[in-house]
Image (cartoon, rainbow, N blue to C red):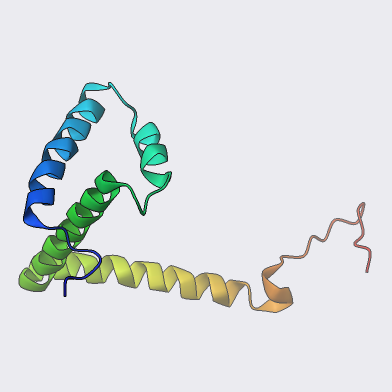
Length: 114
C-alpha cells in the first residue's frame, strides 16, 4: 500500500516537467512567486503541482538534515543560532515577568485608570 504523500514514477516525470516550467517562469519574471503560491493554495489537495512542490520541499529538508548530522561545522552554527534564540526568549520572559509583560508608563500627565 502506497502512502498518500508518494507519487508514482510516471507521475513524477510528468510533474517534474511542469515543476521546471514553473521554476523558469518565476526566474524569468513571467509569474510572481506570490501569484504561484495563491494558485497552489487554491484546491491544494487536488493540485498535482502542489504535491510535486511538497515532495521537493521534503527532499530539500531531508538533505539539509543529513548535512547537519554529517557536518560538525554546520552543527556548531545551528547550535550557536539556537542558543542565541533560546537565550533571547529566556531574557524576554525574564523581563516580562511582572504585570504579565506589560511595562508600566509612569507619565504623571496621563495617569492609568484602574
